[in-house]
Length: 421
Image (cartoon, rainbow, N blue to C red):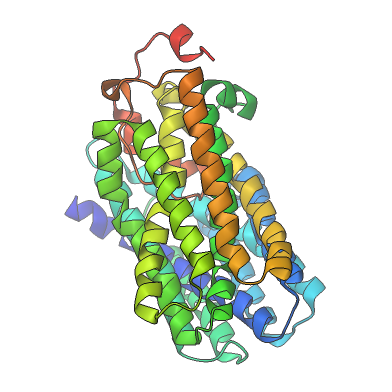
Protein backbone atom coordinates (compact mmCIF):
# COMPACT_ATOMS: atom_id res chain seq x y z
CA UNK A 1 0.00 0.00 0.00
CA UNK A 2 2.75 2.59 0.78
CA UNK A 3 4.29 2.01 -2.65
CA UNK A 4 0.90 2.42 -4.30
CA UNK A 5 0.24 5.69 -2.45
CA UNK A 6 3.64 6.96 -3.51
CA UNK A 7 2.79 6.04 -7.10
CA UNK A 8 -0.54 7.91 -7.07
CA UNK A 9 0.62 10.92 -5.04
CA UNK A 10 0.18 13.13 -8.10
CA UNK A 11 -3.50 12.17 -8.36
CA UNK A 12 -4.13 12.78 -4.67
CA UNK A 13 -2.34 16.15 -4.72
CA UNK A 14 -4.36 17.11 -7.79
CA UNK A 15 -7.72 16.33 -6.16
CA UNK A 16 -6.62 18.04 -2.91
CA UNK A 17 -5.81 21.28 -4.75
CA UNK A 18 -8.95 20.97 -6.83
CA UNK A 19 -11.31 20.58 -3.89
CA UNK A 20 -9.52 23.28 -1.90
CA UNK A 21 -10.19 25.66 -4.80
CA UNK A 22 -13.78 24.48 -5.19
CA UNK A 23 -14.53 24.69 -1.47
CA UNK A 24 -13.24 28.25 -1.45
CA UNK A 25 -15.02 29.39 -4.60
CA UNK A 26 -18.38 27.80 -3.76
CA UNK A 27 -18.66 29.55 -0.39
CA UNK A 28 -17.07 32.75 -1.68
CA UNK A 29 -19.66 33.20 -4.43
CA UNK A 30 -22.57 32.92 -2.01
CA UNK A 31 -20.98 35.41 0.37
CA UNK A 32 -20.13 37.80 -2.46
CA UNK A 33 -23.73 37.83 -3.67
CA UNK A 34 -25.05 38.29 -0.14
CA UNK A 35 -22.65 41.18 0.49
CA UNK A 36 -23.93 42.84 -2.70
CA UNK A 37 -27.54 42.58 -1.42
CA UNK A 38 -28.59 40.26 -4.26
CA UNK A 39 -32.08 38.88 -3.50
CA UNK A 40 -32.15 35.45 -1.89
CA UNK A 41 -34.16 33.89 -4.72
CA UNK A 42 -31.60 35.11 -7.27
CA UNK A 43 -28.77 33.64 -5.20
CA UNK A 44 -30.65 30.34 -5.10
CA UNK A 45 -31.18 30.36 -8.85
CA UNK A 46 -27.50 31.03 -9.55
CA UNK A 47 -26.36 28.29 -7.18
CA UNK A 48 -28.84 25.83 -8.74
CA UNK A 49 -27.14 26.37 -12.10
CA UNK A 50 -24.00 24.71 -10.74
CA UNK A 51 -25.79 21.54 -9.66
CA UNK A 52 -27.72 21.32 -12.93
CA UNK A 53 -24.42 21.56 -14.79
CA UNK A 54 -22.90 18.91 -12.55
CA UNK A 55 -25.87 16.62 -13.16
CA UNK A 56 -25.43 16.88 -16.92
CA UNK A 57 -21.66 16.54 -16.60
CA UNK A 58 -22.06 13.30 -14.67
CA UNK A 59 -24.11 12.02 -17.60
CA UNK A 60 -22.13 13.31 -20.60
CA UNK A 61 -18.61 14.42 -19.59
CA UNK A 62 -17.22 10.94 -20.24
CA UNK A 63 -17.57 11.60 -23.98
CA UNK A 64 -14.89 14.29 -23.77
CA UNK A 65 -12.61 12.01 -21.72
CA UNK A 66 -12.99 9.18 -24.22
CA UNK A 67 -12.25 11.48 -27.14
CA UNK A 68 -9.12 13.30 -25.90
CA UNK A 69 -7.84 11.20 -22.99
CA UNK A 70 -7.61 11.77 -19.25
CA UNK A 71 -4.78 14.32 -19.09
CA UNK A 72 -6.13 16.55 -21.86
CA UNK A 73 -9.67 16.33 -20.48
CA UNK A 74 -8.46 17.22 -16.99
CA UNK A 75 -6.49 20.16 -18.38
CA UNK A 76 -9.52 21.42 -20.30
CA UNK A 77 -11.90 21.10 -17.34
CA UNK A 78 -9.43 22.69 -14.89
CA UNK A 79 -8.82 25.50 -17.37
CA UNK A 80 -12.55 26.18 -17.48
CA UNK A 81 -12.66 26.36 -13.67
CA UNK A 82 -9.67 28.74 -13.63
CA UNK A 83 -11.33 31.08 -16.12
CA UNK A 84 -14.65 30.94 -14.28
CA UNK A 85 -13.04 31.86 -10.96
CA UNK A 86 -11.32 34.89 -12.48
CA UNK A 87 -14.39 36.14 -14.36
CA UNK A 88 -16.56 35.84 -11.24
CA UNK A 89 -14.20 38.27 -9.53
CA UNK A 90 -14.24 40.74 -12.42
CA UNK A 91 -17.98 41.30 -12.77
CA UNK A 92 -21.24 40.92 -10.88
CA UNK A 93 -23.47 40.58 -13.95
CA UNK A 94 -25.87 37.86 -12.77
CA UNK A 95 -26.75 36.29 -16.18
CA UNK A 96 -23.05 35.68 -16.80
CA UNK A 97 -22.67 34.22 -13.32
CA UNK A 98 -25.48 31.77 -14.07
CA UNK A 99 -23.77 30.62 -17.27
CA UNK A 100 -20.43 30.30 -15.49
CA UNK A 101 -21.96 28.31 -12.65
CA UNK A 102 -23.56 25.88 -15.10
CA UNK A 103 -20.31 25.40 -17.05
CA UNK A 104 -18.32 25.03 -13.83
CA UNK A 105 -20.68 22.31 -12.59
CA UNK A 106 -20.26 20.40 -15.85
CA UNK A 107 -16.47 20.77 -15.69
CA UNK A 108 -16.31 19.71 -12.05
CA UNK A 109 -18.21 16.51 -12.83
CA UNK A 110 -15.67 15.81 -15.56
CA UNK A 111 -12.76 16.40 -13.18
CA UNK A 112 -14.19 13.96 -10.64
CA UNK A 113 -14.69 11.39 -13.38
CA UNK A 114 -11.07 11.69 -14.54
CA UNK A 115 -9.53 11.36 -11.06
CA UNK A 116 -11.82 8.61 -9.81
CA UNK A 117 -11.53 6.45 -12.92
CA UNK A 118 -7.74 6.86 -12.70
CA UNK A 119 -7.71 5.76 -9.07
CA UNK A 120 -9.98 2.83 -9.84
CA UNK A 121 -7.52 1.74 -12.53
CA UNK A 122 -4.84 1.42 -9.82
CA UNK A 123 -7.10 -0.39 -7.34
CA UNK A 124 -7.27 -4.12 -6.72
CA UNK A 125 -9.28 -6.29 -4.30
CA UNK A 126 -6.33 -6.23 -1.87
CA UNK A 127 -6.02 -2.44 -1.65
CA UNK A 128 -9.39 -1.07 -2.77
CA UNK A 129 -10.67 -0.33 0.74
CA UNK A 130 -7.51 1.49 1.83
CA UNK A 131 -7.33 3.48 -1.40
CA UNK A 132 -10.99 4.43 -1.07
CA UNK A 133 -10.41 5.63 2.51
CA UNK A 134 -7.39 7.73 1.54
CA UNK A 135 -9.41 9.32 -1.25
CA UNK A 136 -12.28 10.17 1.12
CA UNK A 137 -9.87 11.76 3.62
CA UNK A 138 -8.23 13.79 0.84
CA UNK A 139 -11.60 15.08 -0.39
CA UNK A 140 -12.75 16.19 3.05
CA UNK A 141 -9.39 17.79 3.76
CA UNK A 142 -9.63 19.80 0.55
CA UNK A 143 -13.18 21.02 1.18
CA UNK A 144 -12.29 22.00 4.76
CA UNK A 145 -9.09 23.81 3.75
CA UNK A 146 -10.91 25.73 1.02
CA UNK A 147 -13.41 27.18 3.47
CA UNK A 148 -10.62 28.17 5.85
CA UNK A 149 -9.17 30.39 3.11
CA UNK A 150 -12.25 32.62 3.43
CA UNK A 151 -10.53 34.14 6.46
CA UNK A 152 -7.82 35.79 4.35
CA UNK A 153 -9.92 38.61 2.89
CA UNK A 154 -13.45 39.98 2.62
CA UNK A 155 -15.60 38.46 -0.17
CA UNK A 156 -15.80 41.78 -2.05
CA UNK A 157 -12.06 41.72 -2.74
CA UNK A 158 -10.51 40.21 -5.87
CA UNK A 159 -7.80 38.38 -3.94
CA UNK A 160 -9.85 35.30 -3.03
CA UNK A 161 -11.09 34.84 -6.60
CA UNK A 162 -7.50 35.01 -7.79
CA UNK A 163 -6.45 32.51 -5.14
CA UNK A 164 -9.17 30.07 -6.25
CA UNK A 165 -8.02 30.45 -9.87
CA UNK A 166 -4.41 29.82 -8.84
CA UNK A 167 -5.39 26.64 -6.99
CA UNK A 168 -7.41 25.33 -9.96
CA UNK A 169 -4.41 25.99 -12.22
CA UNK A 170 -2.02 24.42 -9.68
CA UNK A 171 -4.10 21.22 -9.73
CA UNK A 172 -3.05 20.87 -13.38
CA UNK A 173 0.64 20.50 -12.56
CA UNK A 174 0.74 17.13 -10.74
CA UNK A 175 -1.75 15.65 -13.22
CA UNK A 176 0.06 16.89 -16.32
CA UNK A 177 3.36 15.49 -15.01
CA UNK A 178 1.99 12.21 -13.64
CA UNK A 179 3.57 8.93 -14.68
CA UNK A 180 0.45 6.95 -13.75
CA UNK A 181 -0.77 4.98 -16.74
CA UNK A 182 -3.99 6.34 -18.19
CA UNK A 183 -6.98 4.00 -17.87
CA UNK A 184 -9.61 3.15 -20.41
CA UNK A 185 -13.12 4.14 -19.39
CA UNK A 186 -15.33 1.12 -19.19
CA UNK A 187 -18.99 0.94 -20.07
CA UNK A 188 -21.74 -0.38 -17.85
CA UNK A 189 -25.29 -1.28 -18.72
CA UNK A 190 -27.40 1.46 -17.12
CA UNK A 191 -29.87 0.59 -14.39
CA UNK A 192 -33.05 2.61 -14.95
CA UNK A 193 -34.09 4.75 -12.02
CA UNK A 194 -37.56 3.20 -12.13
CA UNK A 195 -36.07 -0.30 -11.77
CA UNK A 196 -33.92 0.75 -8.82
CA UNK A 197 -36.95 2.47 -7.26
CA UNK A 198 -38.83 -0.84 -7.34
CA UNK A 199 -35.94 -2.58 -5.64
CA UNK A 200 -35.18 0.14 -3.06
CA UNK A 201 -37.66 3.02 -2.73
CA UNK A 202 -35.90 4.22 0.42
CA UNK A 203 -32.51 4.21 -1.32
CA UNK A 204 -33.74 6.31 -4.25
CA UNK A 205 -35.93 8.55 -2.10
CA UNK A 206 -33.08 9.03 0.35
CA UNK A 207 -30.66 9.98 -2.44
CA UNK A 208 -33.15 12.61 -3.66
CA UNK A 209 -33.59 13.93 -0.10
CA UNK A 210 -29.80 13.98 0.32
CA UNK A 211 -29.63 16.17 -2.78
CA UNK A 212 -32.20 18.55 -1.32
CA UNK A 213 -30.19 18.74 1.90
CA UNK A 214 -26.68 18.74 0.44
CA UNK A 215 -27.52 21.30 -2.21
CA UNK A 216 -28.90 23.54 0.51
CA UNK A 217 -25.73 23.28 2.60
CA UNK A 218 -23.13 23.78 -0.10
CA UNK A 219 -25.05 26.54 -1.90
CA UNK A 220 -26.76 28.38 0.94
CA UNK A 221 -24.94 27.28 4.10
CA UNK A 222 -22.48 30.22 3.91
CA UNK A 223 -25.43 32.57 3.46
CA UNK A 224 -27.13 31.13 6.57
CA UNK A 225 -23.94 31.55 8.59
CA UNK A 226 -23.42 35.12 7.36
CA UNK A 227 -27.07 36.11 7.88
CA UNK A 228 -26.83 34.69 11.43
CA UNK A 229 -24.30 37.40 12.25
CA UNK A 230 -21.01 35.58 11.61
CA UNK A 231 -18.09 37.43 10.03
CA UNK A 232 -15.76 35.82 7.46
CA UNK A 233 -13.84 33.96 10.18
CA UNK A 234 -17.08 32.70 11.69
CA UNK A 235 -18.44 31.49 8.34
CA UNK A 236 -15.15 29.69 7.62
CA UNK A 237 -15.22 27.95 11.00
CA UNK A 238 -18.90 27.03 10.72
CA UNK A 239 -18.55 25.52 7.23
CA UNK A 240 -15.38 23.65 8.20
CA UNK A 241 -16.90 22.19 11.37
CA UNK A 242 -19.94 20.94 9.43
CA UNK A 243 -17.68 19.20 6.88
CA UNK A 244 -15.32 17.77 9.52
CA UNK A 245 -18.29 16.60 11.60
CA UNK A 246 -19.61 14.83 8.53
CA UNK A 247 -16.28 13.03 8.10
CA UNK A 248 -15.76 12.07 11.77
CA UNK A 249 -19.18 10.56 12.42
CA UNK A 250 -19.20 8.40 9.29
CA UNK A 251 -17.22 5.51 10.70
CA UNK A 252 -18.97 5.02 14.09
CA UNK A 253 -22.48 5.48 12.72
CA UNK A 254 -21.71 3.32 9.69
CA UNK A 255 -20.30 0.51 11.82
CA UNK A 256 -23.33 0.76 14.09
CA UNK A 257 -25.66 0.40 11.10
CA UNK A 258 -23.84 -2.81 10.16
CA UNK A 259 -24.35 -4.22 13.65
CA UNK A 260 -27.86 -3.19 14.69
CA UNK A 261 -29.56 -2.84 11.31
CA UNK A 262 -29.69 -0.21 8.60
CA UNK A 263 -33.27 0.87 9.22
CA UNK A 264 -32.76 1.69 12.89
CA UNK A 265 -29.77 3.95 12.20
CA UNK A 266 -31.54 5.47 9.20
CA UNK A 267 -34.47 6.56 11.37
CA UNK A 268 -32.16 7.81 14.13
CA UNK A 269 -30.12 9.84 11.63
CA UNK A 270 -33.30 11.40 10.23
CA UNK A 271 -34.49 12.20 13.74
CA UNK A 272 -31.15 13.74 14.77
CA UNK A 273 -31.00 15.74 11.53
CA UNK A 274 -34.54 17.00 12.07
CA UNK A 275 -33.70 18.12 15.62
CA UNK A 276 -30.39 19.76 14.65
CA UNK A 277 -32.04 21.63 11.76
CA UNK A 278 -34.84 22.76 14.04
CA UNK A 279 -32.22 24.13 16.45
CA UNK A 280 -30.53 25.94 13.54
CA UNK A 281 -33.87 27.63 12.91
CA UNK A 282 -34.60 28.41 16.55
CA UNK A 283 -31.11 29.45 17.71
CA UNK A 284 -29.51 31.59 14.99
CA UNK A 285 -28.20 33.96 17.69
CA UNK A 286 -26.72 31.27 19.96
CA UNK A 287 -23.21 31.80 21.42
CA UNK A 288 -20.38 30.89 18.99
CA UNK A 289 -19.34 27.77 20.94
CA UNK A 290 -22.86 26.37 20.83
CA UNK A 291 -23.14 27.21 17.14
CA UNK A 292 -20.01 25.22 16.36
CA UNK A 293 -21.10 22.28 18.51
CA UNK A 294 -24.44 22.22 16.74
CA UNK A 295 -22.66 22.52 13.38
CA UNK A 296 -20.63 19.38 14.12
CA UNK A 297 -23.74 17.35 14.94
CA UNK A 298 -25.61 18.79 11.96
CA UNK A 299 -22.76 17.87 9.59
CA UNK A 300 -22.35 14.43 11.12
CA UNK A 301 -25.93 13.39 10.38
CA UNK A 302 -26.33 15.46 7.20
CA UNK A 303 -23.50 13.63 5.43
CA UNK A 304 -24.86 10.25 6.56
CA UNK A 305 -28.06 10.47 4.51
CA UNK A 306 -26.54 9.78 1.09
CA UNK A 307 -24.17 6.90 2.04
CA UNK A 308 -26.93 5.25 4.08
CA UNK A 309 -29.24 5.57 1.08
CA UNK A 310 -26.59 4.01 -1.17
CA UNK A 311 -26.19 1.19 1.34
CA UNK A 312 -29.97 0.73 1.42
CA UNK A 313 -30.03 0.40 -2.37
CA UNK A 314 -27.01 -1.92 -2.46
CA UNK A 315 -28.70 -4.23 0.04
CA UNK A 316 -31.26 -5.10 -2.64
CA UNK A 317 -29.12 -5.48 -5.75
CA UNK A 318 -26.34 -7.77 -6.93
CA UNK A 319 -22.71 -6.62 -6.55
CA UNK A 320 -22.29 -6.31 -10.32
CA UNK A 321 -25.19 -3.84 -10.39
CA UNK A 322 -23.57 -1.40 -7.95
CA UNK A 323 -21.88 0.74 -10.60
CA UNK A 324 -24.99 1.25 -12.79
CA UNK A 325 -27.06 1.74 -9.63
CA UNK A 326 -24.65 4.49 -8.60
CA UNK A 327 -25.54 6.35 -11.80
CA UNK A 328 -29.24 6.16 -10.97
CA UNK A 329 -28.65 7.34 -7.39
CA UNK A 330 -26.47 10.22 -8.62
CA UNK A 331 -29.32 11.22 -10.93
CA UNK A 332 -31.74 11.29 -7.98
CA UNK A 333 -29.24 13.25 -5.88
CA UNK A 334 -28.50 15.67 -8.72
CA UNK A 335 -32.17 16.46 -9.30
CA UNK A 336 -32.61 17.20 -5.60
CA UNK A 337 -29.46 19.33 -5.45
CA UNK A 338 -30.48 21.24 -8.58
CA UNK A 339 -33.90 22.13 -7.19
CA UNK A 340 -32.79 22.82 -3.62
CA UNK A 341 -31.03 26.23 -3.80
CA UNK A 342 -33.78 27.68 -5.98
CA UNK A 343 -36.49 26.50 -3.59
CA UNK A 344 -34.57 27.53 -0.48
CA UNK A 345 -33.82 30.97 -1.92
CA UNK A 346 -37.55 31.70 -2.09
CA UNK A 347 -38.10 30.30 1.40
CA UNK A 348 -35.34 32.49 2.83
CA UNK A 349 -36.93 35.56 1.21
CA UNK A 350 -40.25 34.67 2.79
CA UNK A 351 -39.16 33.33 6.19
CA UNK A 352 -35.75 34.88 6.88
CA UNK A 353 -32.69 33.02 8.14
CA UNK A 354 -34.80 30.59 10.19
CA UNK A 355 -36.15 29.11 6.96
CA UNK A 356 -32.79 27.38 6.36
CA UNK A 357 -33.15 25.16 9.41
CA UNK A 358 -36.90 24.71 9.00
CA UNK A 359 -36.38 23.53 5.41
CA UNK A 360 -33.92 20.84 6.51
CA UNK A 361 -36.10 19.78 9.44
CA UNK A 362 -39.13 19.20 7.22
CA UNK A 363 -37.15 17.14 4.69
CA UNK A 364 -35.46 15.05 7.39
CA UNK A 365 -38.79 14.40 9.13
CA UNK A 366 -40.45 13.45 5.85
CA UNK A 367 -37.64 11.03 4.95
CA UNK A 368 -37.76 9.43 8.39
CA UNK A 369 -41.54 8.92 8.20
CA UNK A 370 -41.25 7.48 4.69
CA UNK A 371 -38.50 5.05 5.78
CA UNK A 372 -40.67 3.95 8.72
CA UNK A 373 -43.66 3.45 6.41
CA UNK A 374 -41.61 1.34 3.97
CA UNK A 375 -40.55 -0.98 6.80
CA UNK A 376 -44.20 -1.91 7.26
CA UNK A 377 -44.65 -2.51 3.52
CA UNK A 378 -41.56 -4.69 3.08
CA UNK A 379 -39.63 -6.15 6.03
CA UNK A 380 -35.96 -5.13 6.16
CA UNK A 381 -33.16 -7.56 5.38
CA UNK A 382 -31.54 -9.38 8.30
CA UNK A 383 -28.34 -7.71 9.46
CA UNK A 384 -26.19 -10.57 8.22
CA UNK A 385 -27.49 -10.08 4.65
CA UNK A 386 -26.75 -6.34 4.48
CA UNK A 387 -23.83 -4.94 2.52
CA UNK A 388 -21.19 -3.24 4.69
CA UNK A 389 -21.56 0.51 5.11
CA UNK A 390 -19.09 2.65 3.13
CA UNK A 391 -18.89 6.44 3.22
CA UNK A 392 -19.72 7.75 -0.27
CA UNK A 393 -19.36 11.20 -1.84
CA UNK A 394 -21.69 12.43 -4.58
CA UNK A 395 -19.19 12.75 -7.42
CA UNK A 396 -19.18 10.29 -10.34
CA UNK A 397 -20.08 6.72 -11.19
CA UNK A 398 -16.34 5.97 -11.30
CA UNK A 399 -16.32 6.27 -7.50
CA UNK A 400 -18.72 3.33 -7.33
CA UNK A 401 -16.14 1.27 -9.23
CA UNK A 402 -13.69 2.08 -6.44
CA UNK A 403 -16.21 0.99 -3.79
CA UNK A 404 -14.67 -1.91 -1.81
CA UNK A 405 -18.10 -3.55 -1.50
CA UNK A 406 -17.78 -4.71 -5.10
CA UNK A 407 -15.31 -7.36 -3.90
CA UNK A 408 -17.66 -8.78 -1.27
CA UNK A 409 -19.32 -12.09 -2.06
CA UNK A 410 -22.68 -11.17 -0.57
CA UNK A 411 -26.30 -10.59 -1.55
CA UNK A 412 -27.33 -14.15 -2.27
CA UNK A 413 -30.99 -13.83 -1.28
CA UNK A 414 -33.48 -14.97 -3.93
CA UNK A 415 -34.58 -11.95 -5.90
CA UNK A 416 -38.23 -12.90 -5.77
CA UNK A 417 -37.97 -12.04 -2.05
CA UNK A 418 -36.05 -8.83 -2.69
CA UNK A 419 -38.45 -7.62 -5.35
CA UNK A 420 -41.49 -7.98 -3.12
CA UNK A 421 -43.11 -4.62 -2.60
